[in-house]
Length: 575
Image 1: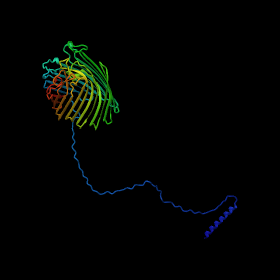
Image 2: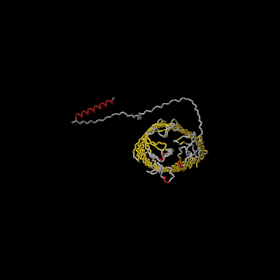
Image 3: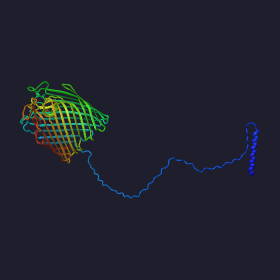
């Protein structure tokens, strides 16, 4: 208590002294001097540690208890068939030579030889020789002997960027104009012989780039003549012909379009006898025909991305230079579309063209023609067609179409009544509309069985003639082959043809008269042939050919019957 009294007295004295000094001083400055004892609370240290608060909270792991199930697996080992290894050569052995010889029942010898170089990627050369002749007799007609000999040689080079080839050929053909009933006729007086010599070559480029330009160039020369008279004074009174051709073209592919152009220059010179002269005491007059055809064909082809649609359009600009100069324009338009992965392919188009006529073409179609004939180019103003083709299965296919064409200067063969004893044919020309309907179907079982059937129907509407002389209205062709163990090869074919009419010059039985023209209906043509080959080994085989099995002496041309049944036997071998 005393201690508290002393503290209070001290505080009072200090305060009184302070106030006395305060009031005793002058001015605003106050000076206070004192001492004190202040107590401060004891500091305490925090023991907690700082923490970092993370905003990503861990995901709790969920566990599922496994059920205790016992399952005993089983195993089955499948059987694997043993592998079969077929050991064979990648490429079959090739032989350089092939020969065939035979003899027929009517004294008909046959000889044929092929030769080719071995397997080569670049070089290809070879030759071919063929001869067949007949010395047999035919009943009730003049001697009908004939012979044909062909010789051919070729060579070619194949490179990556180009290829070229050259070929030469010679053909000698002898025959007789036997179309009259005289078995004892003089052979030399009715003999004819054709000689053909030709040389041709070509060059082709092969650009592998899809945008590359490919071009081609071909040259051809051919000489053709018939038999010269024996008399020296008549040595010029035969037919001779020279043909020369230049064929060039190029194509350029741009995307799905192919731009192409073809240029053909064809020149034919035909001469019979001496121009502006005649045979002494005869009616034959010298003839000379020169004709040049220049044809330019630009076109564009295109196809769709999936190759289902293909189309081509262009124009054919043709000039005919000769006795009369003419220019023709023909359309080029074709289109086809694939349905159901090539099961059905409908197609259609319209074309045209000018076909150069020549003495050789006439004799190729009818070897009994006159030597002094008129040559006129065939002018097909328009040829439209529409059809459909496809496959019925992997072994069966078909094709069917119908076409309509308007043709000027269509060549027709009629019996000659001026320069021969009606055993040769002259050529006349007419304008006509031609309708053609054709259907075909084929079956093929690998290389074992092959069968095809073709049927054609023609309708003719001629301007000046009541019928299209010697042209058929219906045709049927059946062909087939059968390979038995690659040991026996059987082939057969049957040809049927009907509706042909020939021009005659007098009324008679079965002769139709109309517009002062006489027409005789020809018989139905039926021809069947069978061939059997036995392969003894890979190099030697034997064959048997049976021709005209029906033994029908049908007439391909008026007064010209064919041989009856014929048989030929022979052998072939490779070397």
